Every structure is written in C-alpha cells, then in structure tokens.
Image (cartoon, rainbow, N blue to C red):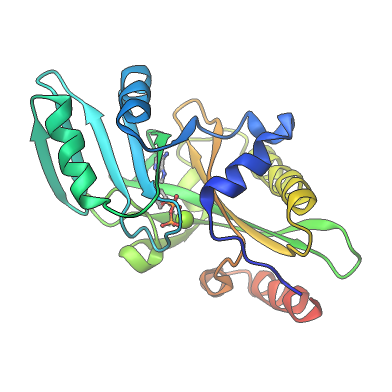
Length: 241
Ligand SMILES: Nc1ncnc2c1ncn2[C@@H]1O[C@H](COP(=O)(O)OP(=O)(O)O)[C@@H](O)[C@H]1O
Ligand SMILES: [Mg+2]
C-alpha cells in the first residue's frame, strides 16, 4: 500500500521531530494575521501557500518594502501601505482554506530565472531508502514558482548548480543523503510511505532548504534527464511497491 499525505502542515510537524531534518526546514506556521506579521518582521519575505495544494497553484510571495508591503501571485504584484490592508486582501484570496506561511528563501537563478531542485528518494526493493534521482526546475521569466505545471523548465541539477557551486558532487551527495534521512523520518510518522520528492531551495550560501515533501512525486520529469538509467530505476522501484 502506497500512502499519500496531502497536508503540508502534517508533514512539516512530522519532520520537525528529527533534528537532523528539522535544521533544513524553513520556519513555517499556519497563516493567521499574527503569524504572517511575525514571519514578515523576522524575514522580510515569506511564501504563502495552501496547506493542500500542488503545481504551485495558490502560492504567493509576500514582502515588506520601504513603503509598506506587497504580494506577488503569478506575475501580478499588488502593493499596500498598511499591514491590515495586505492581510485583508490575502484573507479574501485564501478564504475558507488553510494556508501556511513559510520563511521565503531567495532562490539561486539560472539565466535570470529562479530555480530549485527535486530530489527523488524511494524505499528500495531491498528495503532501504535510496535517492534515485536529482533534477532541477527553473521558473518561467518573472514567476515565483518553478513547477513544471506552472511554466517551469527542467534542467539537470548540474546545469543549474555549476555556476554557483565549486564542489558539485559533494553537494549532490549531501542532497541525496538528506533525501534518505527525510524518507526514514517521514515513514516513522506515516508507515506505508514508499517514495518522496523533496523540493529543495538553495540560498546564496548554498544551504539547502526543504520547501515541501511530496509523497506522490511525478516521476515523469526524470524522463528529461539525459541519463536514461535514472528514470528506468525510478520505474523499476515503483513497480516493486
Ligand atoms: N519558502 C519558499 N521560498 C522560496 N520559494 C518557495 C518557497 N515555498 C515555495 N516556493 C516556490 O514555490 C514552488 C511551489 O511551492 P511548493 O511548496 O512546492 O507547493 P506545490 O505543492 O504547489 O508544489 C516551489 O517549488 C518553489 O519554487
Ligand atoms: Mg512543490
């Protein structure tokens, strides 16, 4: 039985219990007028997202500016002087659903576009967690989400990271281990989980941040990887669950 956990909040709570993984989780709260204000005061830029969402839908970037506040949704940017006006607008956009607010990470860029990484880790037929693939996704011009279903473009992690990282293989190895750690931790809270797709942001210090963990990750983006054996292995492991 392969389980899917849709609530980002439930997954965050589970991962916080393992200090080895918790260090890589950006501060996250359920969105309220108070929590949004607190994270904005602390970090200056945050992401607001539906607790149960996908494809980057409903994801917004909110910033404190010299004149007040602004949010970006898609390519639309709206500014406010007062916090209450900002929050009122966000309340209308998010009505009736649970939203999370998360410390915003300033993503590295490739040819001017923000990018992040997808790390695929699977419970292998020999019953150990293994990272089977890492790939990169760059946002469409001016967009704040990298999702393929939101106009993003798939590149190899090597292509995206090479301009930023001196020791690429060491960095990819560390990401692979983080995927394995995360899989082990999540399976403790949610037995039956057999594969995860981590959305990893890297900031300019090259620290990886876990933006979310998908429990039903799309394997098909790995078809775009020039190393054909990666997608084959992912499929082979999937057919064993
Ligand atoms: N805290 C954050 N800082 C920077 N970018 C973020 C943050 N959270 C989300 N994003 C961007 O938005 C995309 C979609 O957010 P994500 O949490 O993965 O939700 P979804 O389930 O819709 O994919 C991410 O892949 C990333 O590009
Ligand atoms: Mg995602």
